[in-house]
Length: 147
Image (cartoon, rainbow, N blue to C red):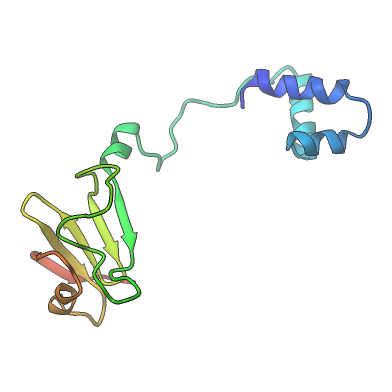
């Protein structure tokens, strides 16, 4: 919320007769937030506090557009594969998934097909393949994933 928007809320609350608590509730602003804004405004430091510094773990828009992991159960309630050769549902984006994580496996879509990178403890690649509707390519470094 910008400094101007905060100032407008403060003005509205100050101008309204009656209970501040009720007005703040209608505006969905907590009492503590209201008083913090008021204090900062009276101290002359009501500007936006955004420093422009990225959080250490924030993705850039470019990174965000390239990374899409799908996490889900490997099969539906009837034990039918959710991972299939070709999707029959409408797609919101084609070729945008970079990693598929299920309760049984971790797979990476590639030009050649789905590469099986990891299997859940107690499962073999063959068992995962039986429950997958697409052919899996075994990664050379295939391993069991840690829970």
